Length: 285
Image 1 (cartoon, one colour):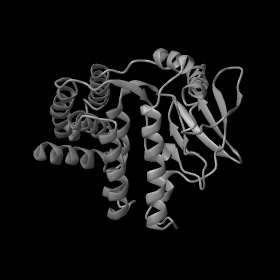
Image 2 (cartoon, helix red, strand yellow; image 1 turned 30 degrees about the vertical axis):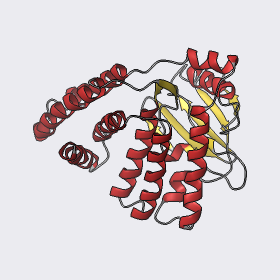
Image 3 (cartoon, one colour; image 1 turned 90 degrees about the horizontal axis):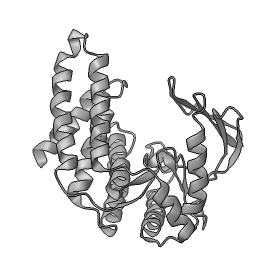
Image 4 (cartoon, helix red, strand yellow; image 1 turned 120 degrees about the vertical axis):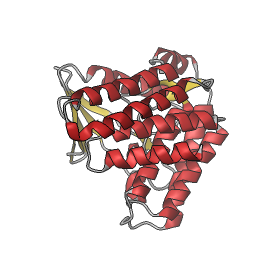
């Protein structure tokens, strides 16, 4: 079992393939997104898994496995890879990401891009507010969480305002759920691989890069990545943001939003860690 969201989705790894299980009819849009990515990412900057089978009930998709480790696997403290190889892997991703987002699209790819959902800053702010509201409603009768409820109410107001108070960057193709487990870096000249296009959309470039960067800091703070390797990867993300002309204030606004979403996780210690990071970020700014 790779991941499991109760009543929503599960991913199971089997020999040579990955099995993604949805609720009834839930595989329709993900399968459509994968087909669209075959057109949109046809420049060869990235490789994507193939759909091997889709159930007639549209609730299961079977994907091909892709060669190579993820950036997450390479960055773990216990990973048997040298720092130089780790740096080369991140450089490979960064070159491919810049080439993909700066590249030109033909008519077919442009048609796909234009058909993707538009995720504005207002949409992102509303989504964060809905998630916080759901958390507050679910925990409204738990006396022990009264202080956490107050902290969340203040945090969500700050995060939502930061998302909408400054001018947005131009929208581009966005993966929508980019972090280091979604990026595969094989050896040699094979392009890096990308996984999971369920959330792909048109969004500000800051959204993907901030998501990737926040997860790197989460690994560091949880002692799953060394400071040296965190700095290597973090520097690559910031270099990509600069090359793509991502506004620093937009990058920071999306980073805050992602940290707030992480605070809502039921994992032990996640709330205090994420809220603490948000407090540190607010003090620095």
